[in-house]
Length: 247
Figure 1 (cartoon, rainbow, N blue to C red):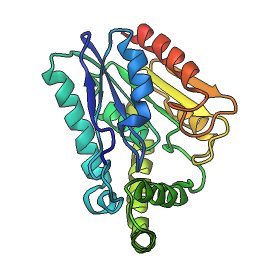
Figure 2 (figure 1 turned 120 degrees about the horizontal axis):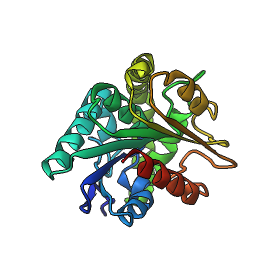
Figure 3 (figure 1 turned 30 degrees about the vertical axis):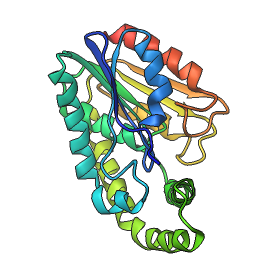
Figure 4 (figure 1 turned 120 degrees about the vertical axis):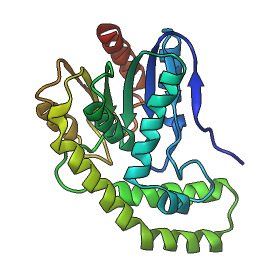
C-alpha cells in the first residue's frame, strides 16, 4: 500500500508551492491545489523527507528542520527549472514554518503564507499526542499486527521529543526573523484549532511589521486542518483573491 506523494500540476507561468503538515503528506493540500490549478496556476507540492512511508520512525530517523528546509529550497529550484519566474510559497502547520523561512531568505519570491502554523505561539502545541495517534492509524492502515504496532509506538514515544524540540527551536528562529519578510503574506487560522493555539495567527500578523500586505483570515468553528475541513471552500476563495492581488 502506498500513500499519495509529491505532485506537480503544470499550467501557467505563475507557480504556487504548497508544503504539507508534520507526519502527513501532500494530500493535505491536494484540494487546494486543484482549485488553484483551475485558475491556471502551476502547483507543486513536495513530500518532506521521511514522510509518506509505512513507518513513522522514518520521520525521526531521516527528517530534521535542516533537511526539510532543504526540501523547501529544492522545491523553489524545481519550479524555477520549469521556467516559472513568479513563485509564491505557502504551507499548513509545519509546512507554514518553512514557507515563512523561505520568504525570509528569498526576497525575489512574489509572496506566500501559512495556515494554522505554530510560528508565534504561547505554550506548547499538541503535536506530540497527535503524532502518536496518526502513527497508530498509519500502521493499522498498512496492516501491521497489534503487537508490532505497540512496539513501534513505544519506540516513537521514547524518541520523538528531541525532534519536536528541534522543530520548536527552528520555529523560534523563524519568528525572530519575521521582519525580514517584505512580500505580501497570507495567514489562515481556524478558530477551533485543537493542535495549535488559535491565537497564533493573530500573533503572527502582529510580527509581520515589514510585509507590504498581510491578509489575515480566521475561519469560525474550523479545526486545525483548514485545507481539508469545513473551512476549505472559504480558504480557497480567500487565497484565490490574494493571489490575484499579488500577481
